[in-house]
Length: 508
Image (cartoon, rainbow, N blue to C red; front, top):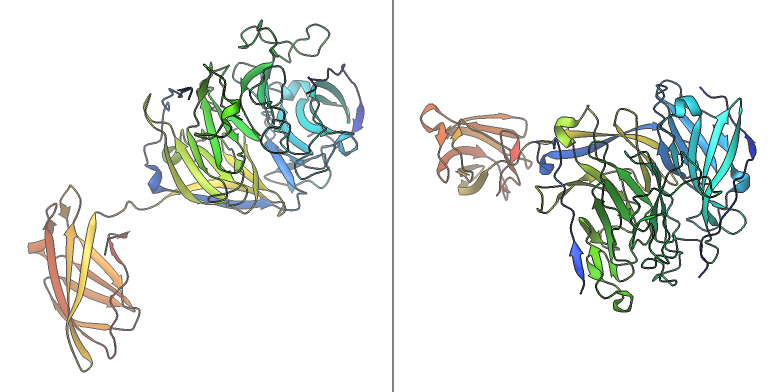
């Protein structure tokens, strides 16, 4: 197996648009300022903002006051979206001449703007380079209508076109993190995930503010494998298969990693800010289970995922997102991590519990088809791009009614000619009294109510509403209230299929 190919600093000019059995470790992280609304009360929403992107892969938002989103396209272009002017036709940057796109997973994969982008004009790109698909991390400095490239680090990846990783992000520590896949094919043919002498199957951590040893970066002194014989000092975390997307929680600096699975499990991992050195287990493990026992190292400690789901049953490739730290929906999902899947487009919400407790997770809806990447703007609001549809969407959230603590039984007691008599029993299945109640249902077959007893009944169209009387207003926990009515209908007289109490569904 080839080791990393060192590439000297490179300056290239390009044109651009005008700038406006083992032990398992578990995370021990509580969510600061977590949202109060339970996840079963939250639903995701999306609003399409733009279309016409060509296989978009990543989103970055420069914190320069411009309100722009920078969106990478697989072929090697960076497009600009502004909320006022929309998607610009002219790309900000075009590096298609140096991006290898053979195979579905190669291309321009990741983008991050420098923290001082407004002053320096520097951004960082992760891409697969011509001619052989080498994984490449480069810095581009935009100035005076041109851009100069300086290659920071490369990793050979010629044998297979898949599993390239491709996320690039600055952490709260000011260092740059970059994810690389395990080398491709299937089953980790190079045993790269567990080896420390290669950057494949890793997340690396670099100090790109300085140069050391003739290279355009330095290795931070507190990287976990500094001074370890035979290990690449750049490595921050290992045991990964294809960490396509990761992100940092803007509040506590913790690292969330979405690692695409082999064929059994998709997984999401969570590391505290000081969690360097974590081993996520691939290819000894896939998700929570052993994948290849021969790849397991005696005495190794593997970090379990905080969330996983079944590949082929619930999706095909996990798409990692962000912990929501915006203001618009803070009361609904503040401190909640949002993720999806390329095939199912399911929206998952994941929230840490108390230290040592399991993470809460819920499906909160469905996103537009083929999501490829989430983005976060300077205000912490979330966005999504999708692959072949080529769209940009803004993500929102809404509260759904709390489930009612009630059960209903409905019977047709007697029927003659075109008349019938029915009884309805409402049970309070909750732990608090019902102080006033209003039960509603629909007569979809066209039944009409007449007189009733023990409730005030009205009908508007097909919708019937029964409201308490003064003497049966309060229903204690576990208690019931029964009422009835006369109605008219000719035929089989089907029962209502659903009842709602105060707008929330009751069990039937």
